[in-house]
Structures are given as structure tokens and as C-alpha cells.
Amino acid sequence: MSAEAQKSEGFNFRLDSTTSALLERASGYIGLDKIKFISESIREKAQAIIEEREKTTFTENDWRMFFSLLENPPEPTEAMKDAAEAYKSLITSSHADD
Image (cartoon, helix red, strand yellow):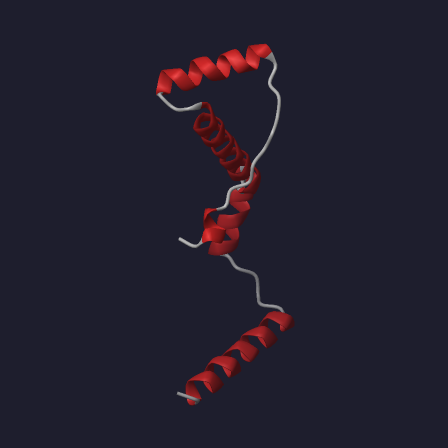
């Protein structure tokens, strides 16, 4: 691993006495030092927030519309036909170079 990849970002912050006591107690229960406990807790919370914000959720009506369009797709527009034709030309010309 390169020296650049091993660098970590340091933070200085203060905790109120209640939070500090909780940190001491919880990290002791699972046998982690406070820095590792804080780091793992931040990572878990950040991943949970990112997953929640980046997932796509569909209502029942969304699902119905989705499957209806799969089963009964609309006719392609001229722009779609042009895009398909351009794609075919691109693929055909790239295979001709092989």
C-alpha cells in the first residue's frame, strides 16, 4: 500500500460528559479502543445514510405502471429509432475494425 493511501485524516472534537461516558462504556463492551469505535460508528452511520438516500423506492402504482409498460410497450419515437440506428452503425463499424 502506498504512503499516500495509508494517510488518514485527523479530527479534534470535544464530547459532552454524557456522550463521553456512553462512548467509554460501549467501546469497552465490544473491546475496541475509543478511536476505532468512533471510526466504525461513523462508517456504519455514513453508509446507512448513503444507502437510504441513494436507493430507489417505488409505490404500488409505480410498479403497476412499470410492468404495464413492459407488457405493452409504446411505439418507439423517431428519436428512439434514430438512436437505435446510430447504435447499430457504431457497433457495425467497430466490429469491422477487428
